[in-house]
Length: 278
Image (cartoon, rainbow, N blue to C red; front, side, top):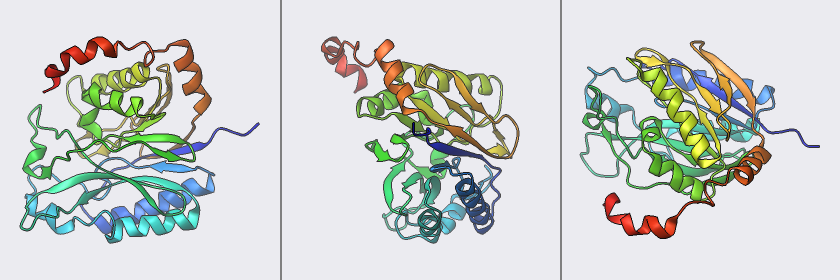
């Protein structure tokens, strides 16, 4: 019987130095490959930490193309060399001239070094005293899930987790696993919200949630993996580093069969309320 594929989850404290974070990322990729992981998932803001006081121009200066920039190109090369897939995050340049903001982008790369999906964060964290839209541009599309060696993966980023419509759309499109790179800010009730919503998104859609999180600076850690029935398979807590977890795709099939939430939806009724989403 084939062993369930292994996934590496990285909880890191990104510095403000892009080159330094790239080096740390490459070391993690090599370590994950030695542990025979098929995929390694990094948190949001992997490329660099940006303090609230930092001007938007600083991110524009370090941002790159998702297809041709050095950061992603180097990761693609290491994916190919180490035979491992990666979920990475970058600050992505806008194609608009003179734009002073950047996209917060997640990139899924396969073990051949090919980019499978590029997702720009849809929901910006303009809440609880923060205003990401000061520095970041919002994406305008939910990317279709991509088939990988560990299953069909849909991408979300951090604050997206608070919007259940997005995870449901990805689940209906066939996602078996949601990877949600995050930089969850610590604060009153924030860790409780984090765990509650990760469990809810997993349970209501019958899929795995892989949520690598930033640690330190202003972030809370607690990178987690939740199974389709809401079981916590991994909680890294307040440790910096990488952990390995196995993903059993048959668990998705079995849970969806015994708790057929997607099948039991009343779309015939829901469509009468489409105006609620406009």
